[in-house]
Image (cartoon, rainbow, N blue to C red):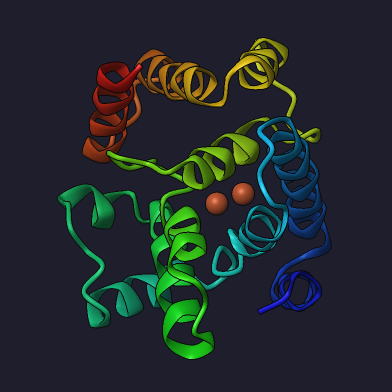
Length: 186
Ligand SMILES: [Fe+2]
Ligand SMILES: [Fe+2]
């Protein structure tokens, strides 16, 4: 798939508002890719496609996840908003033969994963700090990512964990594993 096709597929799969977010993720992905001397195609394709399954009704997402064997933790069913990444990745791989590295970045954009590649880190982080995001500390996270992709991603995961704890929300085991893995690696 080429970048333009990914962009068109995204545009027809989602609301105007979500497409605007997607364009923001693509913009941030481009910036981080340039800073890290990475080739642009994979980051841009992953950015455009990361939320293509987000607007599939949750009930249908659960059915698909069950059918495709994507339910790995009890939290996947109790907090099913985390399923849209794995669902999009599985569908794009099976139906469109999308490159595995791009699929991994799409699959792991919400929760992270242990052993993330630079492309996976880049999409996880770009989703969190794209120019449309506005929360306290977003500038601090952006700067940490501009300084160092790996350390910046750790700062993003840490921020997410603190936010979830503070708001007494469920912490998915994959996010904890991601945090521990990045700490070990850095
Ligand atoms: Fe998402
Ligand atoms: Fe997103």
